[in-house]
Length: 300
Image 1 (tube, rainbow, N blue to C red):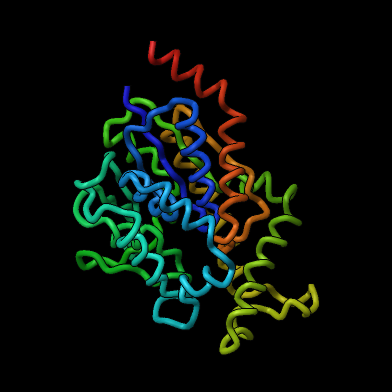
Image 2: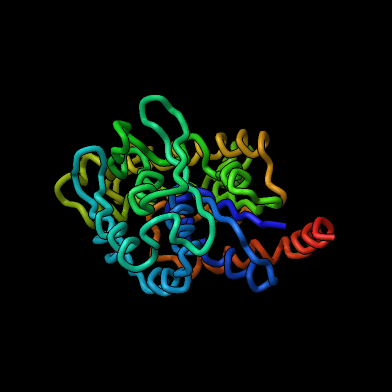
């Protein structure tokens, strides 16, 4: 029986995948096939290339200022960040050059900006495919590919269970990083969500003087002032992604669904890798008996 792992989108919350993978392997579960979307594509590329520990060590050492420098925050065509250094690191340190060179079958999803179609990558060069899958609208510029402009795969398929099955998985474990942003959870967690968004605004406010008045409100301003553009964008994407995820998972449910609690983490808090790693391990531990039972039952 081949086991697939579908790693969902979620920006900085994606470091949770590191803890989830280690916890699954600690249970003796061998992952045969990997798929990823957005940050799930980034982590998945390192994992399928056999470089997950190297990625984990790097992520654990990140500071807030390193994150901002690596993202290349600033006004650029098509997005507010370049991300050049992030994807150069992926190419140089964490990922095989081509899908065919990886240790495990791997697939990535992105979205055609104009047609809305899901675009799947499973062969050829890896890094540009990951970059397309990670192109969060308004944060990163779209990526050109074969006369198409591609953006984040989370627009159409945040947790690509279907790609694991396409690659031959008999049993799929999926990771949904947006469970805390479902409509029925929004009211319960509204204070935590507001706090997470404010942290994103404050991070950019400290870093950018040129256009801070456009994109981020002054933290000292009244609560009656409108949120910054990044907060509006990030929360809108969270709501959209949560709804799309529910719809896709209802139509193609995984055998096991892992949903970590991440409501208080902002989309740019990549410096919180160790905290997110622990949240991933805790999410697997909660489901340990269910995971092992289903695998043993199906495996005979």
